Image (cartoon, rainbow, N blue to C red; front, side, top):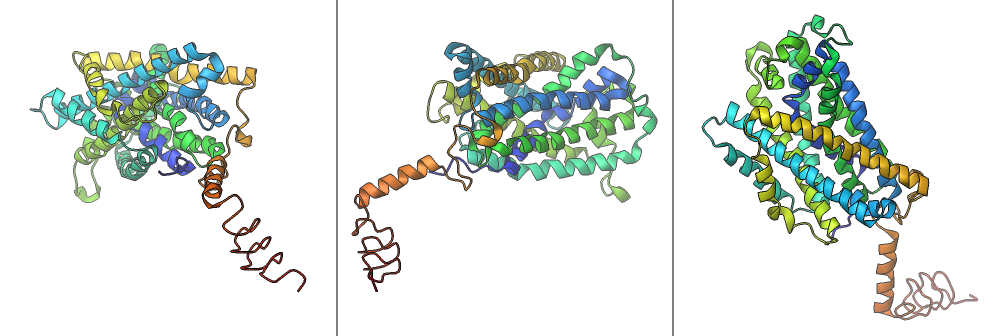
Amino acid sequence: MDNPRQVTAIQAATVLISTIIGVGVLPLPLFAARGAGPGAPLLTAGAILIAFAGLYFVTKLGQRFPHQTIIQYSGQLIGKWPARLGALLIIVFFGELTALTSREFGEVVVTSVLKRTPLDVTVIVMLLLAALSTRASITSFVYIHQFYVPLVLFPSLIIIALSLKNANPLFLQPVWGQDMHNVMRELGTIASLFNGAFVMTMIIPAMRNPPRAVRASVWGMCIAGGVYFLIVTATISVFGPEETKLLLWPTLELAKVTSLPANILERLDAAFLAIWVTAVFTTMFSGYYFTIHSISQLLQLKDHKLFSLLLMPYVFTLAMMPKNVIDMYYTISIVGRIGLLITIGYPFLLLLVAIVRKKGGNAGERPQSSYNGDGGDDTERAKRANGAKRANGPDGPDGPDGRDGANGSDGSDGANGSNGADGKPAGT
């Protein structure tokens, strides 16, 4: 069995990046333009700060309870039944979030690429791929994200950089924006695109050094939020806020008008969609994995694989409930804003209770953790040592106190010495 504490801070950051950057990149500039017009980049920055607050609460709770997820330690803070209700809300929300992600993926594919393919077929294929992938361990889960992050991040930055040659800085003025009557609604909608960062509560118990979780959270949010900020800035500066409001997927249109130098590729939308499909998979993979992982912990089961396929009909049913694209985005907006109460409000409440009741420990003290920093656990190491002692006798193979000596009574390395450190008889 592999050691569960193998995740480094860099790997935790990659999980956050690949989970956050997903299906939401396509309508993101539309949400921002509706909320603040030319001030869309500033609105996006505000949403990033709100999302980071929720991630910070989750991370601090994880540092106080480094061996448990929010499903487990919430019972110690607010009681058994309120904690179970909170866990149930988390499971239902992330199940719905996964369903809406798969539905949005299907709508984009049947509209832009596979126009004759039934919608339910594309949704089922992506859900099946995610469901089969979730049968892996938490370590494999992290490695999958680590593998796909470069494939999503670097091409996205290249496309954004190439699109800026068509930018008009006047579209970004005034910086504070205009027509701000929808700003609060769209601020919540944009912040909800970062709800996937909640999976950090599942990653911290698998980290080698939980006190570094804050650093991983900062880097993950800065990189993912930076990509979102650049996408909004590039889209608004190319199309302008008013035209962006008329586009269903402005980021896809941005890729269409972007070309490589010397017209090697006159349109990058095909390359962008390939990157986007990968990003959608990692986001859906995280949501699906977190959902079944939380169910197994709520039911106190040792393995989550049982639910990998059992959950799929439920998620598919939720995905097909919206009647059309407009209804789908209306549902996404409502569910996302309500989800902020779960991903930000609920962790804040738990952290407040933990501080008042002095539960858990401080970030630098590694509370309730016997982790020693090298990928092992002192408690588990002690159990293995005791098992070795029982197998070989109470005090070693031959000598009463010999550690490595074959016959020495007190020699630590000697072969036959009685008290000498190097095998020499005592007194010589």
